[in-house]
Length: 310
Image 1 (tube, rainbow, N blue to C red):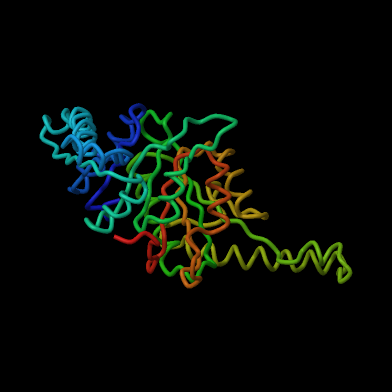
Image 2: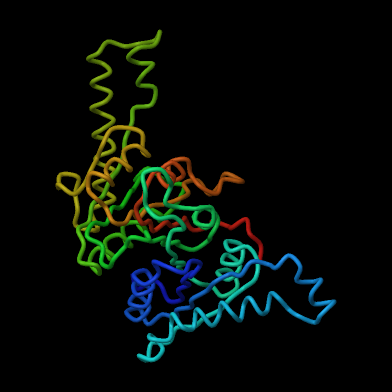
C-alpha cells in the first residue's frame, strides 16, 4: 500500500465518516503521504443574481461554511501533529473530485458510500458509480457500517485480461498488502466458463456428453494453470482453500463468493479493454457493483483516460 503518496478523502456526508477517515489518516501516516479532505458544495441557483443585486457571494459563503465543518472534523488529527489539508469546491461532486485528481495528481480517492447497507437499496449511489466509472486513479469506497479493521479481503482477478497490462498484478499487490496491513484473511476468486456450453449440450449442434465433459475439463485446467502463474509471485496457488476457482458467470461468481466469505472489502478492476472507445466500465464490474453491499477498492489499467476534462 506504500504506492499511495497523495490521498484525497471525500467528506460528502455528515455521518459515518470516522472509520474511513481514520483509515485514510493511518494510510497517509504509514506511507508518509499527503492527505486532503475535500467536499463539494452545490452551485446556488441564484448565486449570480444575488452577487449582482446585493454583492453577496452565496457560493463562497457555502464553501466557507462547509470548510469550517471539515476543519472541525480534521482538527483532532492536526492537533496531534498529523497534517490533514482541507478544501471545498463548487459544482457537481464527481466532476470536481475528478478534476481535483487530475489537477493535483492524487493517486487514491477514499470516500464513504452514499447509501447505508440494506436489502432493498444498492450501497453505491450516483456519485459513487460516476467515480468508479470515470476517476483515473484507484477509488476506495467504504461501507457506512464499517467500524474499523477489515477481517476478509477478496481479490477478484482474471489472468486472461491481457489487454489491461499489469491490472491483475496491481489488484493482487493491493489486496495482499492491504490484507497484511489490516491483519485480514486474503481470499482470491476467479470465474471460468466454456463459451457456447449451452449450445454444445442442448442446441442443434450438441455434442456427446463425454466430449463436452472433456472440453470442460480442459477449459478448467487451462484457467487453473493461468491462475497459478498469476498467483506464483505471491506464494499462492489454486490448491489452497482461500483460492476460489469457480465455474460460472463472473459477476455471479464474485458476488456469491464475497457473500460466502463474508468479505469486508473487494479489490477489483473496473475496466478490461482500454482500446474500446467509450467503454468506461466493464460489464462484470458494473453487475458486481450494483449487487454488492461490501466496501470496494476499484482500480483501472494504465492508459485509462477519464472522460471528464480538467
